[in-house]
Image 1: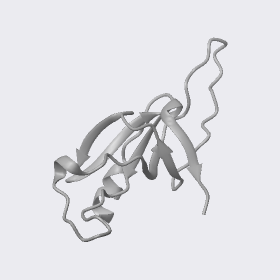
Image 2: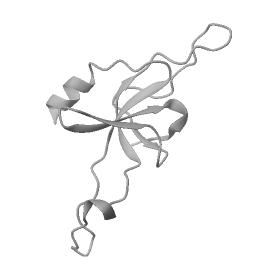
Image 3: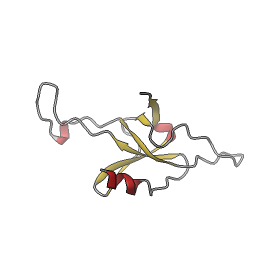
Length: 104
């Protein structure tokens, strides 16, 4: 897993985009039933691996990004674009698709 994270940190998202490593999906229900891939819920939580510099506004300034590398976030269910780096599933979302930062 560290190898995929190392490669992901070489990604430099543009604008207000954020690279997220989704939390793994549940493999089994609480009662012990193994779930096939088709029955698993799409994750909506993950860790921020890389953050873009912010969107350029009409006046030429940059919009501030509200999340930082290492934050645990909740994002919209069908947001972003999924892709793989070294076999690890990652997601690129726009900052507007991030719903909240999870505080520990």
